[in-house]
Length: 291
Length: 240
Ligand SMILES: Nc1ncnc2c1ncn2[C@@H]1O[C@H](COP(=O)(O)OP(=O)(O)OP(=O)(O)O)[C@@H](O)[C@H]1O
Ligand SMILES: [Mg+2]
Image 1 (cartoon, each protein chain N blue to C red):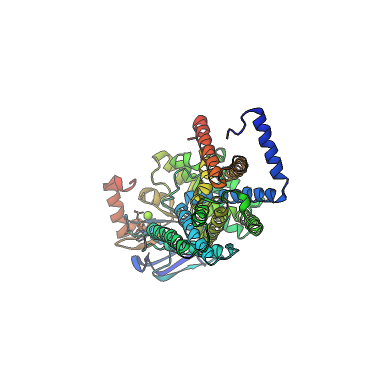
Image 2: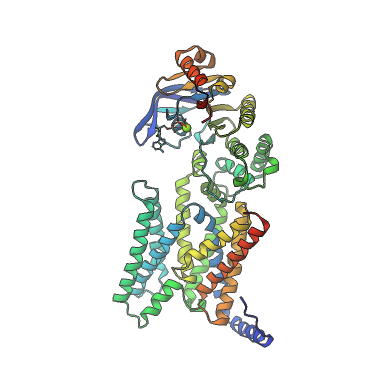
């Protein structure tokens, strides 16, 4: 994050940024990017602690597979099938995870690698696009810039992000209870299976959202890094959740700004910012002796 | 009517019976101790009582307005993941989840209940501490306070003293006895038959021989005499 070089350089950067910001669309895109980052961080703790992180990883590959189907079908609005497809996969993965007879992890590995292979195969064989490797690359690592999102994608992302945040806040205490101690929650009459399903569906939505921002291979980073960073410093569920949301928003904002100024790919820039933040939080954690 | 009535109840996992033909009653205000050898199905029985698993055969009836979700349950093992960020307060409050229903936030009444129960358990000064950083005895008190938040009537405790040192064990027993005097019905699994007969008023013995009755009857019964003798011969049974 050393974009402030010489003074003239800095001025030039600020001018460039101001120029970008004049376009309403750039502002919307930035707001949406930051909102997606906020959503991704919310369920991070649950994902890390509930052994759902592998589901998240598997799902992001499934999302890639469905995305390639959408590309082959030449759909302008890929979200129409990517969202339901990923949600369906989340529900199925949750089922197999609960079924003690099938090894959950193995099933997930199979599905996720299978989806990757099929996705690439489909795109390679049937895609009408002239820039195939560019398409594949941007589905895997995110678009070059957040500005390539279409107006419709921006709207859908904004709506979905707001829904995710509302659902999370509404069910916050339930999510804590189910994540912390499923057995007790069940004995207290909480409908644990229903909430697990809800969590899985929300994770699927978050993954589809995050795919727009950072691409399918980097989603896990966006979801998990803020939570892990926050857990280095804080020790209560609430403080960890709040801080990881703040951190994620902060990193996404800087990532987007830097990517616009320096012309770097937006997804990996955000993730790089998350990694730097993780390093700083680890140091702070060690320094204050909380770990 | 009794709070819990078990009729010819068989418990187990996936159709496999672990303990069968259990008949007993828990009345309001009782202090029932469940004893028996390792693996005899005590934990399985209480899991059935709190509806974590289904009975293999027979039935459990809940009476006196007791709903199964309103029983405060302390599991034998609470596996909390390493590094789980959760404060004592957050955990105790989560005991109110059954009262809360679909309401998204805890109300002031529930917050007060949690605070009162932390006070009762003597963990008020730990309320902002991280659960993972507490000692075993402190953790057990936190989970007991959480169980208390979940119930007005009945606690089911699965070996609440396992792993605690003698002093903390004695404190725990006193705490539970005090709760019982305040009117909360107690069902407790224990390996420590001496304390069981000291505090409980009813005993359910499961295993090779099944026995249910009042404490005094148990002490004079064959099952009771054999079990007491075994325990006094082998001091390790009590505190694995
Ligand atoms: N989740 C499970 N699935 C299948 N079988 C189980 C499960 N848990 C326990 N069992 C079996 O059920 C039997 C009874 O177990 P249970 O835990 O009820 O014993 P217990 O009386 O509580 O013993 P302890 O004194 O060691 O706690 C054991 O033989 C055990 O192997
Ligand atoms: Mg047991």
